Structure formats: C-alpha cells, structure tokens
Amino acid sequence: MRILGKLARSRRLRPTGRTLGFRRACFLKTEVRAIHWGDSRGRLETTKGDIRANRVIVTVSTGILASGHFDFSRNCPKASRVLLLHCLWELQPCQILDRFSAFPSDLPERVLAEVDLDSPILIYLRPYGFDCVTGIVAGRYADWLERSGPVDSAAVVKEALSSVFGHDILRHIKGDRQSAWRGNPFVRGAYLSARPGHFHQRAVLGETVADRLFFAGEATR
Image (cartoon, rainbow, N blue to C red; front, side):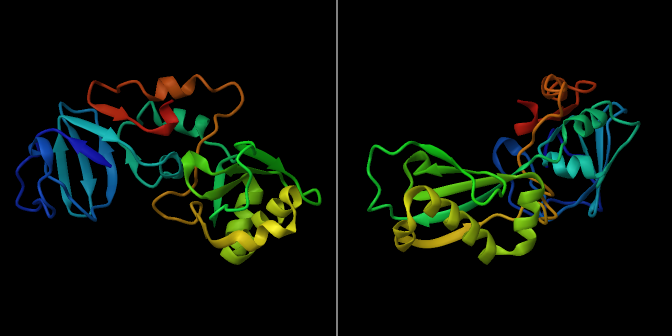
C-alpha cells in the first residue's frame, strides 16, 4: 500500500526506511489494519501506530481487499464493488523456462492445449521475446495445481507442450518456475475477472472516494 500526503508527527511512528522522492516517507514491514477515510484526512491503523495523510492510494490485490483483512471505517462504498468484481476464475501462471533452440520462427505466439479432458492450458511461446514458455490455468484447477506442488505443476505444462509439439520438445527445457499466488498471504489470489454483468464495476472502483481515497491497479481497468 502506498500513502501520499504529509504524514502527521507522532512519537509512536517514525519512518523506518529511506525517504523516497517527493519528500514522502517510506514505512517498511508495516501492516495496515484499518482505513478511516470519513474525516478531513485519511487515517490508517497500522502495526506501528497511526498514519495520517491527505490522500490514500490503495494498491493491494483484490484478493486482499475481498478477504476482509483490513476494515474500511464507515463502510467504504467501494468495498462492495470489490466483492462484486472478485470471482473464482482467477489465473494461475506456471512458467517453463526454455532456450527454444529447436523452435521454428513461424510458430504462433500462443496455443491452447487440452490433455485427457483436463482443464485447458493457455501456452504463450517466447512472451515479450524471452526464451521461455508461460502456461496459464485458472479457477479450481489452478488451486489444485498449486496445492499439488511445483513438481506436479511443471509436469502438467510439460505434458501440454509435448501434446502440441511432440515429446522431443521436453529435452530443450532447462528449468521451471511456478507461482503460488493463492497461498501467498500478501496476494491471496491472482488476476481478476469480473462476475457476469459487473464489468462496469471496474471503472466505478477507479473513482475517488471523498477526494481522499483512491483505488489503483489491475482491477480498475
């Protein structure tokens, strides 16, 4: 979470990190418990005391917002918007790194693979010019892969690759990495999909609350 505005002087709270640009203090390892936005200034209850600011920009994930981890004083009107936007069909990327020395240059940028009636996997080939493959799955299947662990997740994407390009492609794989966003306490989810009929809530979520509380990030677009 980023906080803009002049910070109130307090004996209980002092900047613990370096002062960044624009003369704003940076507080590291500081958990926000509640946001009070109804007064003349914003006030944040944190594990290191209160922080007051003229403007508050909330950039945490929608998974954190929807979890109710911290409280919006006076029932922030945007909190319900977050719940409407937040849905189970989030995306869980699983990356397989590869040098791609054997890949022809005329291959498509992405393919959709489905093996043995499993959930489909969207595979990006050399995304942004990097020598890797990114496999993306969603929803309950993504949760199941995350719980299964990195070895099983890598095996699933490798199987999807070989079903499209042949088993020989596996010998070019040099390593792999997987995300585990659902179980990450600082994320609690992944990319956001709006529920049917609620796409317009993204724009509403991006509007200012009382000229002092702002929501930013992927969910507002």
